Image (cartoon, rainbow, N blue to C red):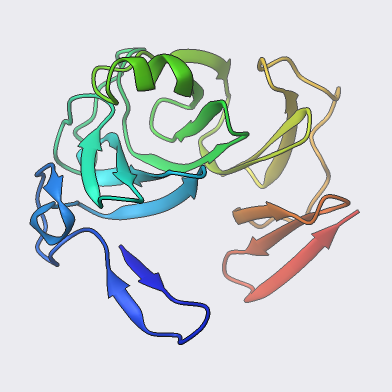
Length: 201
């Protein structure tokens, strides 16, 4: 994980020493295995450590890395257990909840960050709020909604408790929405294989 100063543009490593593995700890002593995505609150950076099948937290004041649940190292070796992850590919937060795209389990899982903090950011509990018929690739929250991009070339909208907000997913071209974000008025997604960024009003 690198931090880049907006004033000077100088990158600084805040976590991970470059070698593949799994180790909690401070700064470059920590190890990751294919960290694919991250999201943040004021004092925390949460990382989808995809091939360790877990979520890591980096304390933005101390750079100490902890795991929200025990890992299962290895791509494709995760568990179908509803309390574990199997290739988490993306995550997002609204400040109080963490929403995770659990790819191989075709599910969206949620962590209550206040409860997790009380557990000192370890052995946190997951709530599976959405079962999907396809694999989730990308996820973003925007106000009262969660948007999920899936590998069957659709974007789905749910409320924050996982109930569908629409009868049908958003119609997009036959391309997987690889990354999702929002500007508060529309969705923006990247089209895998077409080298395009698309705004969805």
